Length: 311
Image (cartoon, rainbow, N blue to C red; front, top):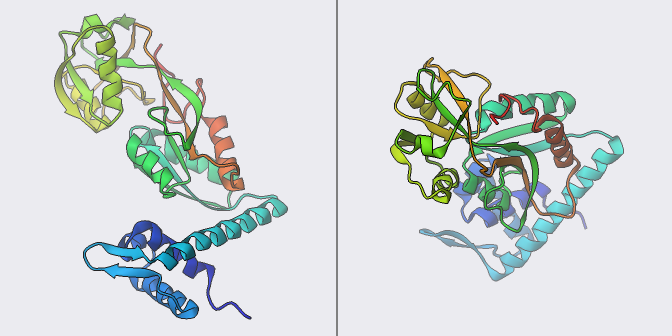
């Protein structure tokens, strides 16, 4: 008996089952809502079952039969992907789409260069990228919205594998004319009475504030911002100092102001930049290739777009 449904229809159905609405699935897979709705209707007609209960206020819910169908559809799609990977292995080349997520502070410096070098090495790979803060990146991995994430080793859940690539010790950022700019090292005690510009991102702010807490100190927070370029401009214009781990290769703020990077004296845990993926016994050839590329490009000695760490 010939098949009267396609893998594409199953893909659309699974996308809606994961998203809980046609509109959200449409955004995630970049396919029009009418096309997704038509695919689901065709599946329901072909198999003679109702897959979803339509709730106007709450979107769509899988019926009991729809939940069983959903699990089997995901298995079929996984098996189809395995065939795709087998073909890649047989052909001995890497190809296909890969979605990369990156920490919002790291992405502007690293991702474009890393993506370009990976595509030059594997011209049949189709790379897409996005930037987000730590918590959102981990959520996107768990929802299969991205394949890999370049991020920090902060609050990694048990179902996520994290491979460390490079350590980024904290340092002090000040304006070029600041009295501390000429120092080789600065202590937190030196900074206690200075106005601080806090990088106010989830996980990052707790990391920086914990340094003061470990010394029984309290910083004098003058400004907060979740935008690293804004932070650099505020510091360059004399509004305060900042603690950071990301060090761009240029010591100039976006508005042209000069900055100095001074080592922070003390045994503080560095941020570890690495690659995160959902735990699995099997990696696709494409993801494994990108993982290997990251290992070769991101090390303690070199990170694309960044200067060597301040130690």
